[in-house]
Image 1 (cartoon, rainbow, N blue to C red):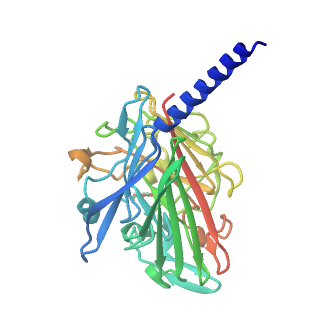
Image 2 (image 1 turned 180 degrees about the horizontal axis):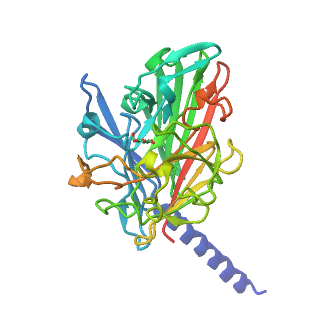
Image 3 (image 1 turned 45 degrees about the vertical axis):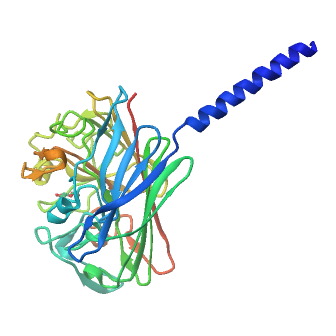
Length: 381
Ligand code: BGC
């Protein structure tokens, strides 16, 4: 090859590299910013963190309750919309909320008759739901102010939340040290990782309680969303939504989402479980080994083309169709949240596990570290 030829070739390679470098520099990086979100009744200030993945996704998260107050996701035309229910201001969350977007603990979901025993000792909890204990009691983790530390790197922007729940908090034993990390990644994921330690044996079930409507705000009900649940079995419940203990096959029941089905297709069927839940409000047993990140659910909203995939290390997932929303809540931008305006996919241990020795254990002991991860991944193919 002539000298001139190799010079030309070297020149071309250099330009390509430079072009790539410029493109990389221009590529927006994940960022996180932070501002006040209002004051709690005792005068302490809640913060609001804005996570931007540099690729069209944005989340706002407050350290009050670890609440995801908004989540903007592009549709198939690249148009972003907020796909979670909630309020415009802290005042809304302080007044009343069905756990919109919150971190729920110590025990997400229900504990039957608001009591359990562990190592021969019995514990009594707040009976805040028809004689049962729901979502950690009267003042669960969704109503606490978490310490918050924002972070970002080239692939993600996030906020790390930390709290210490004292021994006896809401009736639960042990001083629990909890860290929950939210990260918005350049792969269009909202990743939530949970870690906890205790100084006495205790029970624990941490989850995120986002209400999604992938069509965007004020879009009406979620019945047209198509849902797949990677679960062959679910945990049937009694009339107060406490599991009977059975792991029942979904085959031949309205609970069968092994292939995608519109949420509304069977929700109105005359079925005892649907009657108890006033719709879907049940826990499914996620296929595959708990402890490994595996597919639990995929939801597609046909009009916008948005798809949300849920992967988790947890053994179960509660699918709840906003059956208790009744039009009395006015949320973001004045939107009235009518019946079934949002759905929840809460990754979790099974409800009432502390009273069901056969269910995957929710016990945490001193010296052990609890770890769990859930990833909500968005696309609009
Ligand atoms: C429960 C519902 C409850 C809702 C709001 C869900 O996790 O399964 O029964 O109404 O939370 O509290």
